Image 1 (spheres, rainbow, N blue to C red):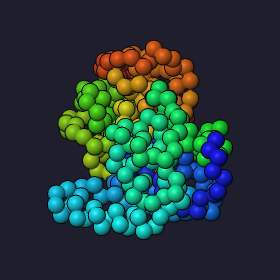
Image 2 (spheres, rainbow, N blue to C red):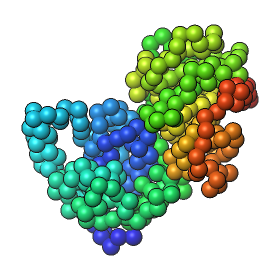
Image 3 (cartoon, rainbow, N blue to C red):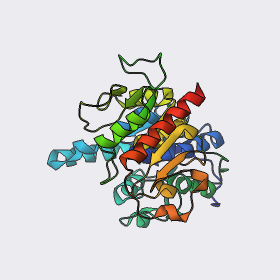
Length: 331
């Protein structure tokens, strides 16, 4: 625990992106708010993710980092003005959970009395952090971020608290009938599920309503029990659809982490090559598929960290049957 005893009145949290990383940082804010309820916390975040955190009781304000507007000469001039507004507030404490040179610069430019970062920060960011919290690169992202609490003298919660918005259902979405969700898309290379695997999942869940969500391309010839809502929802609408789902199957992606935070025991994450102990669902009761096996997170061991493979269509069909079985047991 750090020796600094003063309770900060102003806290700047630097965690601009990505969706999954923003979700992973929410329990830190929840714990800080419980310990320092009177502190004013501003979250430096990309505009795309602001609606996810602006309703959190521990977030007083968001500081929007519009990265796309800072390109070119005109963008450089806009960034100078933006940095000036960042400096004017002058927090007592800045916490850099992004761990990159740019985020460390933001924390330093804010003029904060204390700048806290993680020991695994990259790009020389550690040189700009006044205090470094030791973390292990093998730990889950949520655990790494929560390590900041011990350093600040805040009790670590027994269970991470994800305070998330209720969301809003998109116009035309039928809420009267139960449904399964599949999110097949992912940004990382080789992490998405192709159309054949989505069809196989729907076949396995035949007779049950299957809703596809996310950002990506799928053909129109999907099975009759599939409703394709991909590319048709904003973040709050996606949140509402996930909240209402009976069971969720997702690629390793930001929406998977959102689903796992909302419904830990009713989310299954499909990991191809990524390490579920580091970037999978954070709760022990969530489900993970890797290399043909479905396990609860609490049953995973070191063998799951290695290289994986995509599921076969037969395996995806079995996952569809399993999800349908979960829906039946819920009903």
